[in-house]
Length: 216
Image 1 (cartoon, rainbow, N blue to C red):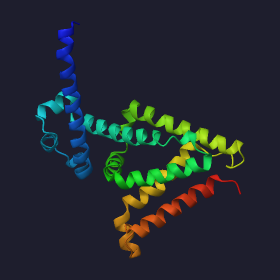
Image 2: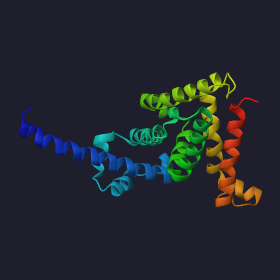
Image 3: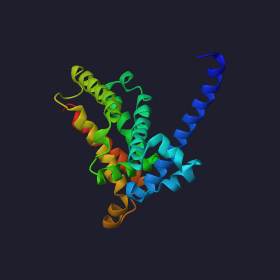
């Protein structure tokens, strides 16, 4: 490719990348608010500031766009987890940091939870097709397994802990509380999203998780 052609192609590619990112951001908001069934491509196009035909050009259809939004959501949390540098920490501190991070990330990104809720309504049929999602999650499982093994060798953690089960517990203890805070607040007669209640919940989650992994 000539230099002149390259000079033309690069700005076009940057424009295309920006358009796709804008579409994904708009789609994430739309799907989070309305679910897959209620989302409308017209509204996504308006949010993104693009012609609706451009969405179909890049993403083919609404289901493909929904999957792309899910993958982008997982990419966001996995990249943020990498910034924790968990392997540089002592095992107990690493587990605590991951647990605290998960809670705080869910609080800061409620759209992540609502996207997962929507996909669960569809029995995970989009993520089942996603090789990218599985590849993005594998490093976390490997890192968690390494931390658990370091803790076992050091005599800090008990052995035989499945890193996948442990992560599901870390995520689940935060996810259920936050996804169901309205119904839980109603039936128990307390506002579970007050700052004091949130702080108490995070302390409880850390106690439960560390109480499970630490040796007696």
